[in-house]
View 1 (spheres, rainbow, N blue to C red):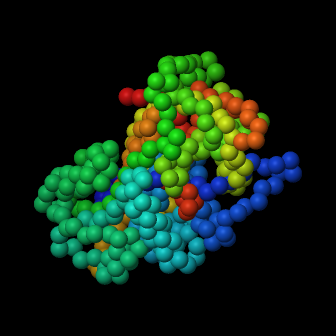
View 2: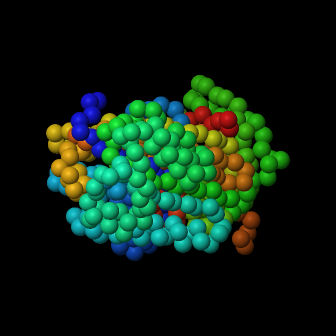
View 3: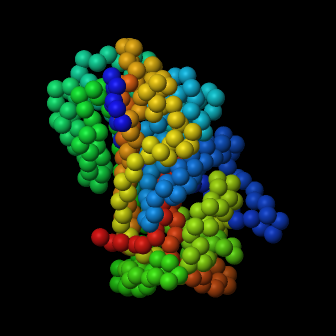
Length: 417
């Protein structure tokens, strides 16, 4: 698309997700929530955005999918700091932000501090960082800079897009690579930045955690995985038989795999039917997810889970427009006047996202980045439940105390490449 007097802003985010407990409906179809109202409201907001984005991504792509709702929402939240008018309203709406935007930014800052507290325990590796990369000599609004630092702890490093665009691109990409332990490479591809770029906002998050109950590698064997009812492939299937939080209905099984010290966990949502993923996706709402998760109870489970590694590279422009964020991409309607002292006409030229996940016997490693380019212009032995993930399923990685989704995706065809 044509770039008019443009400021290119790149926000690169990596994320991890958290879901609080939720339950399957009982015979009367009701489930009681145990989360305090304030926390429940924040969780509902974060989960709603994650699922809204997942639905649009699922419709526009096929096969495996993995992304970081937290990364995307953080990038958009940083952009929101500099938005005004209807542009601000549309971004706030898709983020499910309350009318009081300050309250929203305070909640984001609180979650960032919560991540830092979890990381300080030393049981897992959980790192997040935000940075601002303005054009050398380009005057930004002091309020914009103040709020980015206050709510997102943003560090500022000037670069020269005008005279050396490629060096600026490589500098930012190296920062992303370093912050994600080299798991997210080439977030900004050639052509994303140019001499009219004036600003790049970057957030990176990296996670590595060991299972609280690790799998024995000697029990991993190659077995069939049904990509569809008619098609199957052979994958390395891990196995263990232990007590997990588990729930089931006629249409699906849900199992929670905690990481060390139980601050984060992975939810696996497995349809009962081998071709049931599409139906599960279409029925997935914040309310249902909350209801299903609240019913998780400890029981002995014979768990079969495939090892898998995947990387997703996504262009999110059309997805965000479909959710209602249209003005930000329109050079004639976008309003990012709170970003700069100058009267430059700014608009978003592209939103790119990249995410990585590796699930094995020891645990999980995950990272993600999002770029927003803004252009100027026991009593009795219980029966063993079998949970065999040998057909497409959903995964969610969560930080359990906050209720925000960090990562989610679908595994259609596991790969350990």
